[in-house]
Length: 127
Image 1 (cartoon, one colour):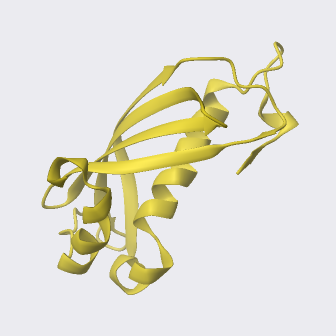
Image 2: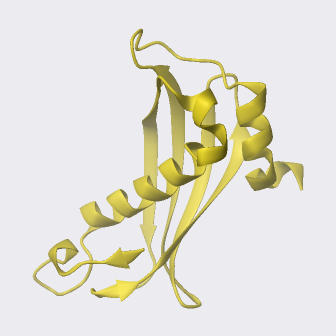
């Protein structure tokens, strides 16, 4: 991923709202990966809770990585830990509780076995 000049505030560092968007992109890439497209079709990922911690100022433009790990898989929810890195430097970390919702029903949807299997390698509590 690459940060953009428009993501910055008056101090020249990436704004907290832009950081939330970067974390969202990381969660979406993890949960809606191409190998589980059939399992996630018709499902939205609702963020029920999001906590971000900023460790260092992140300047733009620049190349970054967004890491994401599932630390808990519930019946219809996921706890995801994330970090934004530039090189070896961690600029921010986040914890999100996400709920799978049916797009039509807007009701919680069970995490399928295939999706559980897909997310399990990223599940730190199983290592």
